[in-house]
Length: 431
Image (cartoon, rainbow, N blue to C red; front, side, top):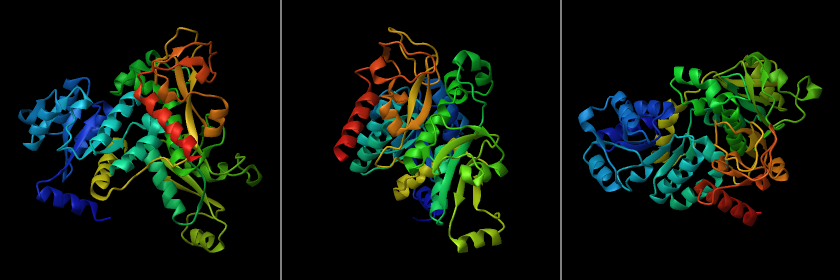
């Protein structure tokens, strides 16, 4: 791997900046576009959103002159304009051209759109970077394999909590530490009964979609993020839904310890979330090597036998350009699932569901997400949260209960369902 800043400067000097298409111009996409517009050697050549005015505004706020922004409705026109140095806006990800775009960033948070957009990018042999972790935890394994076969990168973005946490886990393991626990701080207090209506005022005051904000408050986003960490590292949730304790940074190493060591854990190697340390991410580490232990004491990290590595921030979408640049320049991957499944985010009923009801998806009124080990999810016949949007309830599901495959009729025309079935077939074939 080279020097990232210098290599980007070389692209700029050669008049060959990394050309990026961003799908989704909400809070995350808008910030990403602004960042891309400020970085030497990169440019947000195309922004796609169902609200084309919002996509156009994202480019204008990134400093692109209005005269250079054009609305398109087909990939050929988009390709011609980008080749001329213009920026383009579209309401449909299918308008992304096969040439003039180096990488695609999916930032909608909707599994179905993420599935279709990622598959299209891979088919066009473009790198695909996911700010859509909801898609990754559902079908990331199959998308990663398809991308590898196509010779392109599939990666979850740096900066969001999963990427930031995995970077800490890898940092710890490459120094010889064992990882006792890894996780994130939760920004909002948990309210499993939250709906878009109950969070609407706060969401709008923060410039966020009520549905997206609801997925933060009801815990779904946290469950999804820690599922991504588990599937990328092999760490597992200790219990369904995790513990979600309220702690300070100083509490982490002594609390995330085995019960016989004065902590709360029944086993090590877990993922969890914590109230009170947001917006940071953490890893609790340990070692049985006396030399490393002595070095940690000498370096004034603490007396052990466990220590906390804590990053007090994550810069979310603002860090995404790093993942894009490293994918294009070095084929580097920030986060992708292991070859075997570790955890699952399954659907739980937010209210009692009855035959004929339609599930409205993530951050809605009918279901929320809960993390489980993959083995427990399989034993419970639990439906992954990412495939249930638009599914019809065919058997009663009491509030708070897991939605099972036998309880729903999923949509036959769903791409995320199709790719999930392919992923399961590959897993069964590979044993």
